[in-house]
Length: 102
Image (tube, rainbow, N blue to C red; front, side, top):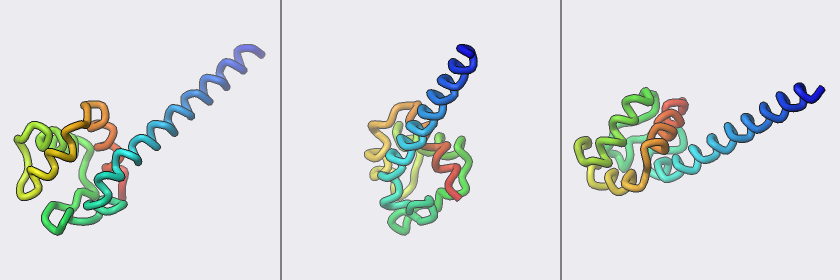
């Protein structure tokens, strides 16, 4: 009986952490949604590419490139400021979240 309780407790904790992570990703994306749309369906300020449908790896490359100044077109300076405070884990998580937008 104690083993079953431990398993249930463990699954509850994992579920809670997953929900918290998803909420964190949505909070990170709010800043993006202002220009890219709630489902990443818009060209930001009419100048960028639509990022909906991009693979997480492509999004990560773009975000890291904006951060270090090695990527971007007309939105490069604006995006550098947007991603400057994101750490590697946040960039990975945000990229996966954006990839899920359909």
